[in-house]
Image 1 (cartoon, one colour):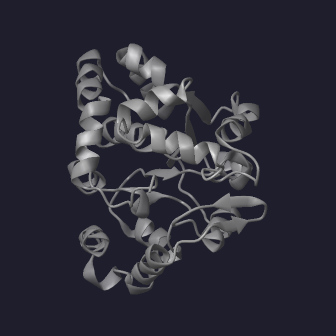
Image 2 (image 1 turned 60 degrees about the vertical axis):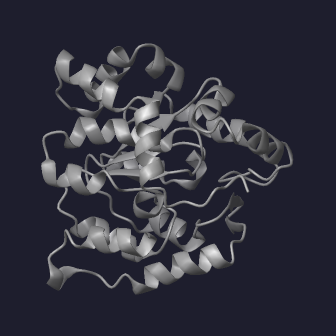
Length: 269
């Protein structure tokens, strides 16, 4: 399924410019067959994380001005917030909206795969990119991203158990048990956890290219919060469009869409 999804994605690129995705597929296949905890500097990464790609993103990648990167700890709403951005940014760009609706973690996360994926990004016919990452702030070259004009969205649930319980109600107990056993020290240093991931972003809360998005606020007043998000991204929307996006990106609607294109193994096992 993953191979088919990437083949569909590169079909939007003119045939003579399409990169060879075989090495990328091999990277994903090897990772799924033999998953390992890896490290970049002092930070730990779980399944799919590639230290070489993190290093490339930190030192060599040249993002586009007005790229949007949605950052969050795994399983705390990265996909949902990307979905909101997708509707805001691509609503009137039918081609980008079409291929973006099937994008999942392997396609757009900075730390997954190989540099071939970045080459695909460069060649896709989108005017503005919505990307994702689970990395904590210390794993990103935030000064360079700011200089390049990248917009950073940090999804920060105030009651993390509330979000996970809504999205993964049958897995909450497994998630909690694994978390307490230290199995979810993802994209933080050894011995750290979710709160350290959140706190890594705290010094950047007033950066002009960083916006902290709170799940509870979005759920309680989606019209107000989506309007704030649109203003931050420089997207013009009217009240009717905001209400439409709120309906289209309810957590229930987003989860249903992602269930239909599920490409990621169950991390709770």
